[in-house]
Amino acid sequence: MTEFRDSSDDRADAAMPRRTAARTAKLASLPLGIAGRAVGGWGRKLTGQSADEVNAVLSAKAAEQLFEVLGSLKGGAMKFGQALSVFEAAVPDELAAPYRDALTKLQAAAPPMPTKQTHRVLAEQLGRSWSQRFSSFDDEPTAAASIGQVHRAVWHDGREVAVKVQYPGADQALRSDLRQLQRFSRMFQALVPGTEVKPLLAELATRMDEELDYRTEADNQRGFAKAFAGDDQVFVPRVVASAPKVVVTEWVTGTPFAEIIRAGTENQRNEAGRLLAEFHYSSPARAKLLHSDPHPGNFMLLDDGRICVIDFGAVAHLPEGAPPALGLMMRHALEGRSAELLDVLRAEGFVRPGAEVDADDVYSYLLPLVAPLTEERFHFTRRWAQKQALRMGDLRSQDFRTGRSLNLPPHWLLIHRVTAGAIGILCQLDAELALRSIVERWQPGFAD
Image (tube, rainbow, N blue to C red; front, side, top):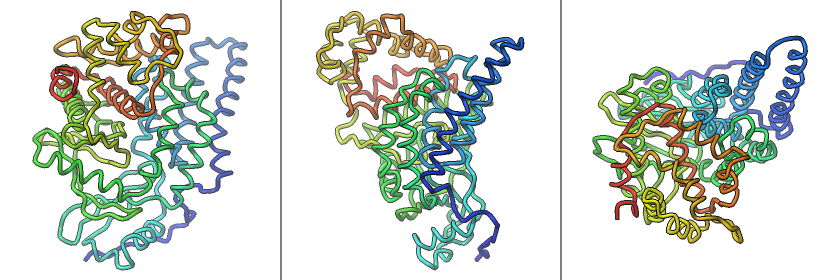
């Protein structure tokens, strides 16, 4: 058996800043820092620098601070940053460029916890003789998540495994961060236009208890692994062992989607997009579950051509599969049936009580969103995503006024966020794929 290191580094024995006051101060520094830079920017404009030059500097500095603060805090702050990262495709290029790298880094980077602390958590969760379960264990983490970090190891039977260890204090940090982030939701809305920040934070807060118990995550992963066992397109690693704050799964090596987004070939990007769409739309039918944490860090392309999906802390349980009403709305929009479309929206609670809306206005508002289903193959691009965000965010437009009359019912929130997140990744991939054929096969109510 390999000897286990127990390094005695001098770092503080804490995985993340735990005191509420300290975390609040760090989060509060974001709006204060951005405001301070804005004041400085006006000064530089007065001294002759162009508005474009000044805005570029301000955006770059804001992105740098966003990554530094959210990444170092981990917890809810980092989770929020990861959730935002998939929506950067909808931000205009002149604003998005400085944020792109910073937000992408959040998908796979955070300072590690000390080795002693990692060993302490493993002993608490797997027993004092935890090391005997492994033939070897690498003390250096290979990846960091919002509430835990991942180590590579070899299980006692010779299988290579990934060991996810939760940061001590993650529960307090998660709750504290999400409370503070909700206070600053307007500021984040301005930083990343085209996103619905407030309901995103509310949904993260609602589901945090599920994500804090790795036994729930393990059960979710077992459900997906069983549903996709032997599949020639989707691979879900099997769970080897689990505890409340530690989960051990099969180790998988592949090309992360973040790498494909950055430097993938056209064929890689198109195939990654197709596989992601296939997994997203088929999961409710095949597993009665919906993977609800869509960001590139949770997907890899394997050498054998399959998509590998990881991290099942956030999962929606859909015992009846995907709601047929979603397929009906898509079909009515495609066929120009504005009255029938409005009827379904009202029945599902999408129209605010007492709101007077015109069926044709609602149809015009939603029609561009089903554009990917109007063609045999659709090319998802950042430009298309930006156009939709600008259209719906233009205060002078009828689409904006129509949007204000619509509502997102609580039971639709997760499905909406996951679908929007998946589309965000498709746009980051710049993928072209036959989405309509995938929807026709898997989405109830669309082709019925």
